[in-house]
Length: 397
Image (cartoon, one colour):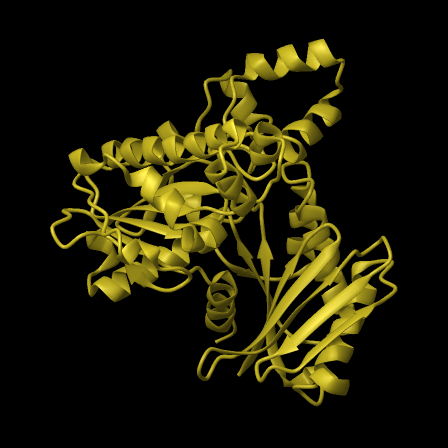
């Protein structure tokens, strides 16, 4: 059975086609610059590639090109879209309406679009992609939606409420939602598998570190707290996002610089984080290189990131009354040994000891804690597309 997985952004449409008999990737690609001019890149599982500039006024044209790439030319892998059993979509914000994976209906699409105010960069494009997919696919092809926020719906209210008047929660739905849920769910389940243990018996701190980063406390397979909050802006310092900041500091800067709320949203989401602190780049690799060369602002940025990771690991160990394992995943988590090293330096009080040689590993499943470490530390590459495909298959069946 073939499942198409779609991850739509405001101006992009990433996809993977998987064969669920062995969970192999048949093809993958990205249609981007939608609404600007348009570009598509595609690659098949056997190494064939295609890249071209295209005209993508909307997500519908991007989907039509996706169909063309999959069924014709150098990157053809299927004869027609009728070979695709179902399509699974990643949706960022499900709020308190969607607490689990579900089948797509017109009502579901409208509800996802209705949550756009809570995720303006993501949810409306998701709805556009769902409607576009429906237009392009053969009639009756089932679509399934998998929500980033659903994994965090198990958080207790002491973790998800803010210290604002309660009406803000009941009337405006302002609360911690958490994100990266599909990634945290995938890597924690994979960890239990490689450890040979039941997930229900484990207390895990999962660190998804990339251009966007979040850390989640997972107790018995359930999220009990996470660093991202009402939006993906909260928590750790990230590529261009500021992370947790005193709200008064935000208001002070707005007043001093004469910013509107929309301008401050852009400032904190796109001009802050690694980029704003270092003045060099939003890419951790550039920051680490500059730090090694003696750049003080880059060094301060590295120190902040490591400190915050360490702080949240300790806090979540306390919240769960113990810890069995720490996971590093995401682009930085999987490929930046120096970040893992710095974050876990002097963590022996928590029962964590790193194996320096094992920690050199990049991009593979690897235990990187020392033999005498009471808490195991693992690098587990994430695979959100596979999780979405599995959820989609289960719903269709």
